[in-house]
Image (cartoon, rainbow over all chains, first blue to last red; front, side):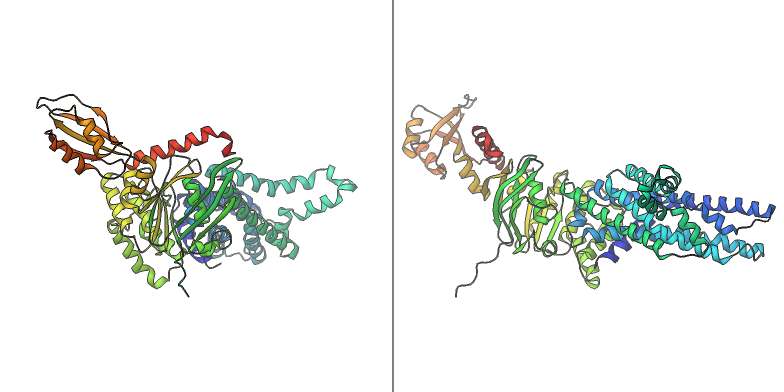
Length: 253
Length: 332
């Protein structure tokens, strides 16, 4: 892992000069600002029984769908399209270091984007002057959920990028995977044929992989290690598959 | 005890690479001593790039043994990667980086100490005449500059072995000259393996040439040796006037194989161009001149035709295709 930091700093710099990053940042911040204003309007009209933070974070999947593809679709597909992966892998660098460095850079940026939304809460605190609106529990839980689930989402984006040398194909693939994992779980949890006795283990697995359920738990302040394990193991799997995918494509190039 | 023979820089033994049923490289063996510049020639699809990629450890070989500076590529890829500088075909470079940034990044990946890297980058920028563009974005550079950035990158870590796949492709003659001088300046210090389509290039820079076709080595040696081996003949051209009737006999006294290949038309001064051919590779120019003068022939010019590497290349690849045609099952 000698070269991990070299690649990480290089990738962060590359992301910071890429137009994709700024498109993602502008789209993300305007969307989040828009949602936040909408929430505040509802709260100013009538008293609600949940805190604005939990409503705000409930829409976590919306930015994930465009931000993760924009941040990650380029990382490995571009290297293969340009052929720079060849010069990269003929230095004393392992494929794992390359994939991890790129992953970590994309994740850092993902977190930085989300971190910037804390400004919205700061503005609310500064100007609303109503302590009930700023409930630290759901805010901390929401950010924790974003940080933990982001591990998996970004890893899925990196994996999708390793599958195609075309950046847009990689982007659409990662969007598909993300929709599948976020809404697929919700859908599978509601279908009736899974309720049969014989399929009980499958049903358990589906229940375990309910990302929305995890979100509810986090914002209520319940941090379950099984849920953490779900994201960490999913991330590790996605990254291992990315490394394998990059190496397999070398063999057939 | 006698000293050990110096270790070759590149050693390839019975290398085979097959992709899904197609044999790209078929039982190649060669060694390159340290400090030599070796040229790799072959038509498209001959297996040049594949061989180079296997040498760098980027692709695994199907069978055979490859070692760089004594380190087997298959079992010690890291040791090998620390000892090579590699410039792939088409010289891929990241578009959005500046030249100096790119070299810094590559230097760090190649494990050059942070303190030494800055001065080393200055050195290679100067060596490759890139100082003017050091702060430019690579994507906006012209082809010649990009190519030199690739070369600068491959010599950056001062590796003992440099492998360059078509370093002069797409350059104008002036830039080719610069690149050629650059490669020649590495002679003796580094072992350089270059592939090229431009044959005069290879002839001028390389100590030794390997010609490969359809995954096999069809000829190897110094350019001069190859001429003798593959073509095995010399040709002379004289412009003479006077009684030419006795010429064939005269030539026979010099060398029994020497014969008139063709005679040109007589020009307004009475001279005609006569082409001579022999299988004897030794220079017979002086003998021919003497014989002609003694018979009263007037000679305006005499020259020995040097077969170019191009002729050698064509002859060698044709020979290998003939061999394949005669024995079509040999490749499967």
